Image (tube, rainbow, N blue to C red):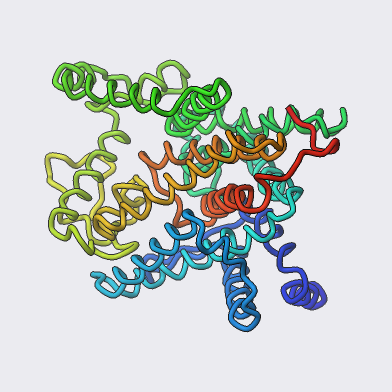
Length: 448
């Protein structure tokens, strides 16, 4: 019975690759990861095999047709991404475990090539931004409803909430990060004047589901990401100049350095652990004395810095942190959830992890992607006279900021769940800049 469906899917790969990409986007929240630690293998089904096929066909198409838009290739964001991939390749050759690093690099290719390079071409049509966003949000809503119903059987217990989203998300932090990512999107869609009353009612229904999922994720990093998105929205909406924001950040950093001893002493007095109570759960964010989750993050970060100090230029190799960090843990820094097996997550940071795995240039390449994408969206928002383009750039950058902030505390870009929207939204920003920034607004494009 599956043969006709498989035949139709193959036909679509050769004729409608853009629709295949949107199908993968819809399937991503519903994908299930099969992991084999001994084989050093983790594969999300059915999405990652589908991405591999997209990667192969798209590269084949580019090689033989040579029709890729050079304006995309020379864009600062693309240059940053290409440098990032080249450095991953170089550090894979010098890796402590080359097999792991090469697999890591291949996974990056089947995430980035389809969902950045191909997606920029798909986003030549502005309608595809909403289709892409809704494709992910609809299936994410299915996962949230499934998780919430299961969670209700346990009285919405906070401890149970750490794993109840299994098998679709591996834990509450990844689950919360992706829900937070789409809060700015669904919030923006609520104010789209193109929507009918029925569409707006449905949008509000999905908005309520996403907010419920965000709260019940009990992910403090996700909540912090939302706070950062709100702050950015205020800065952009009221056109607060970057120099004042930078000055505020520098003054805040200076005050922290001057008062760091007193601040650390104050934090050490906080004994509030994670809790089902919202206020207590927020208070536990700054608990660095008894909260096992916070202490384990610090342990992982310190281990990463020790690894970096030994190999500051090439690092230990992409994807190798979890297999190499154990000797760099000190016994007095370990927690009740520490492990030497490397099977309990990575460096818990999108910035510190690359520092240990790919050295200083690896970190700089990651920062370059974040900075160039941010300032591209900022420029589009300020300079475009097309209100729809400004609206979409605002949604895209506030969504990405939730993850840029979340990335200080966790790292999920080695999974399909986070990579699909992350690279897709960066592609949207670049497409807005290259193809749509100077387009005049039409009556059909009126939005708030």
